[in-house]
Length: 101
Image 1: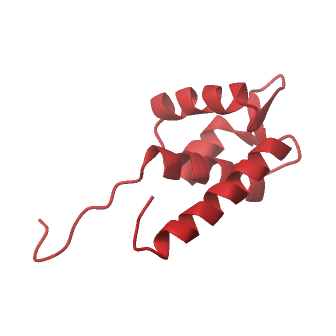
Image 2 (image 1 turned 60 degrees about the vertical axis):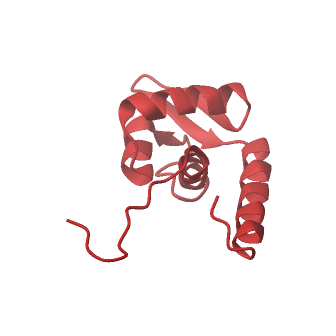
């Protein structure tokens, strides 16, 4: 039970995208990319939700999908790196005005 001024803070869709891209950029376990299971654990997102997001990120060119005999893996693309840099910059800028993105 929450007491006093404690509130639950939920991540926005953009926060989740930022977490997925950051994980694919910084924390990939090997050069082939990160598996769906790895991204689910690191970004703390359900399979149902991440599968839709990954499909969109690949379609938009922000992630590259590679397939192997075992599973699909994901790596951040150059376009994804640019997007993530702009997103982080805008988030920091908004926070200077007391806004949370």
